[in-house]
Length: 85
Image (cartoon, rainbow, N blue to C red; front, side, top):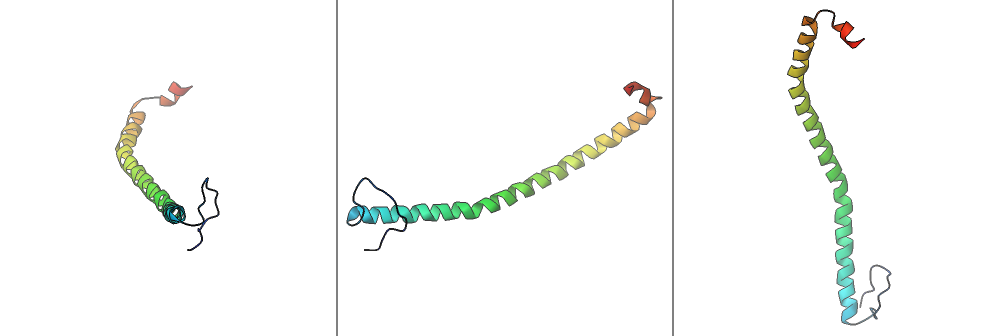
């Protein structure tokens, strides 16, 4: 019988028998899920960063005509600097 992969306490005797096999499978499952989660966090962060950059590019494309329109309207108003005094 192989030893358990992680040292842990169980309220029953997990050194042999069906409980040992069940805890061995559970510990293998837990280690597998933990490793998959740890390895996918950097991919998740990079995907989020790419998504955020694409959204900023779309926002820039949307805002460019509005900023140009605002700039042309500012030049039409005479003495517009006096409005902000």
